[in-house]
Image (cartoon, rainbow, N blue to C red):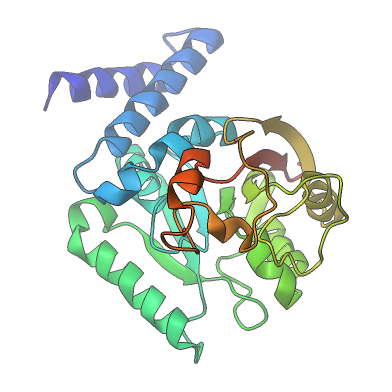
Length: 281
């Protein structure tokens, strides 16, 4: 065991014992999470192209804001290619937690879904030392709405997905399923491309952008309560007025070489980052 891991083990032990007062235990626990996140983010299992996006996605700061703890049961909704799975899986594996990847319905007849699910599964199987504890389940409206027993999850995370659900009238039922899955007092972390407030919300979200106030109202309408907002994923250089919507920006770069350097200079989209809580009663 490396000196770093000895330090982590000692920190976790101190956080769990009654030898420290409550403030010191909380500080030790917070430090342990930071060490584990640093190790996961620096891990050799991560795809290099994913690592390059850390500067725009701020994974450590985002997950700390959402209240991630190593022993939690966490449900990552629509993990896609596993960008956040690369970070969540080793932290929860080492910390004795549980990661549920609530992806698309495997019974779908969509070739895109089939290919994406196969790619995600291949990623998990390639590194069992990191991903062997990941539990793949399904959460997709309207065919797969019960990914886990009700009241089983401490933290639900969804990254840039609300705009995908809106054209399918799926946003509300998907949020209701997340609410149902969470324990009373459980947390929901949301990141989404942020639309300007000078235009009404397009209910189809064709541009990929969602107004923050619209998202808050929608999420609270199913029972959640907004607890905090963070600007950790803000990008004031994003003008949100592109012909190809948010996909004009990296990493998609929808227009190819046209104005490529301009869009690379802007960077990834401006995003709101919100933490909600399911009421304890």
